[in-house]
Length: 156
Image (cartoon, rainbow, N blue to C red; front, side, top):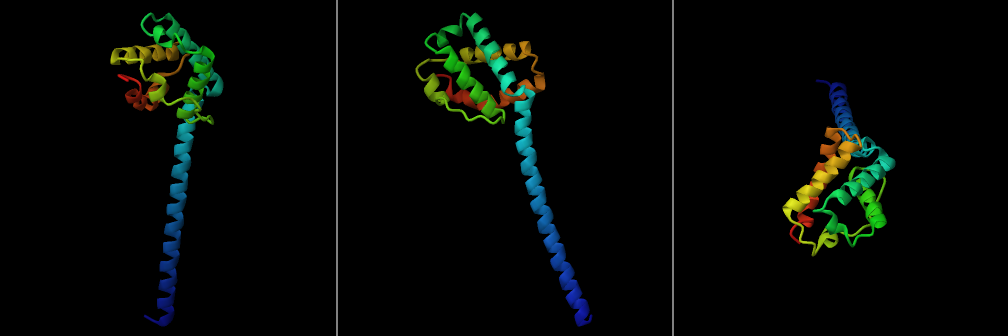
């Protein structure tokens, strides 16, 4: 192998490494964009700000009909509750909102919410989503994101 062949091979190896690094960077960048887009897709699937507002209104209506769950909200300012829940759903669904309310633990401390109470409230949310025409896959995506909050709501 001549010195020119050796230099050519070295240049080709360096070029291949550079291309591999560039492709890896582009792949990571696109994967990041896809996850942001996927997060925002739940927000869009819920109908954005207006869809979430309608869902929250319907959920509050469902709560008001429940003799078991409505008492937990007796001392709650309905307008503030709607505002903060809308922020929370917007934020957790990948929308452009920041949640500015109290933590779930602080909001539910001292209420002695049982697992049955929690499950009934989830059922009310599902009823609201059904009445608003939210497709089942979208409902499941939202419930999956809300589920980790369970530990900060029950038995406090």
